Image (cartoon, rainbow, N blue to C red; front, top):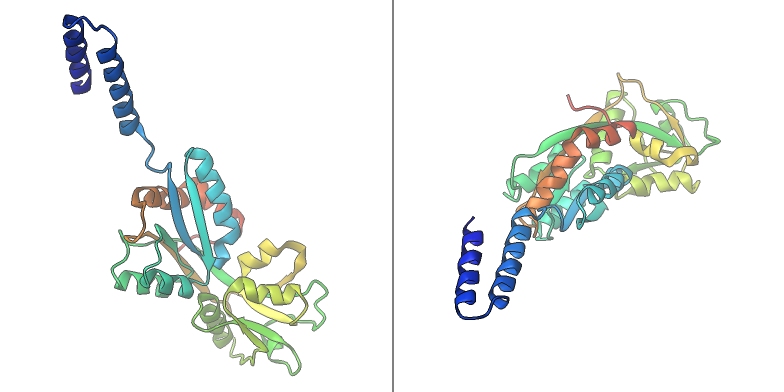
Length: 268
């Protein structure tokens, strides 16, 4: 209303001075600009998302859907081990959203007071044994990973998939001497796909995402371990409003549906 009244006054003033176009044109342009600013979608901008490597497929899908729902949005995804991402954020890397594969790595960021709001746990994941499609070592359970001559790949212990894998091995009273340790779940899974190891302990969602490139050997619930995935918006990003919009989208029924179809479980 204020803009409209100002435009009217300018138009009348211009008419009294003998110019009936210049003032009204300028006022109309000003009014349109003000309206556009007031109605601009805060999500229609760049948003930087740091996410656990195990979220690669699902967050790529969600980013595409988010951009389609918010014309002008540009989701920039950075996937890596949650522990590495947490350290990058603490070191000052600009990010608007952090989705971690464990509460422990998220706590590092919250302890540094870098979250704009309390994190929300949105999904849960558990472990599965991945083997080559032909399963040459005939792996049938966790105990088989400890057999002499079996080459096993695990995630590094400080990485959520490593900590969760070790928890499962402890529950099964199995001690494994890994042939190699990977920096994140995708690098560990790739060793199975390349035939460089006989088995790897990874998330069940990553086995599913790999399709026929690997074979999954399920772990009984009594021996398995799980990890929660929290998400939070951050204070160090350039677009907090867009970050919140993306986090809200992940937490929406649409986001949870995409994650559920990929094999992620509901948080308890």
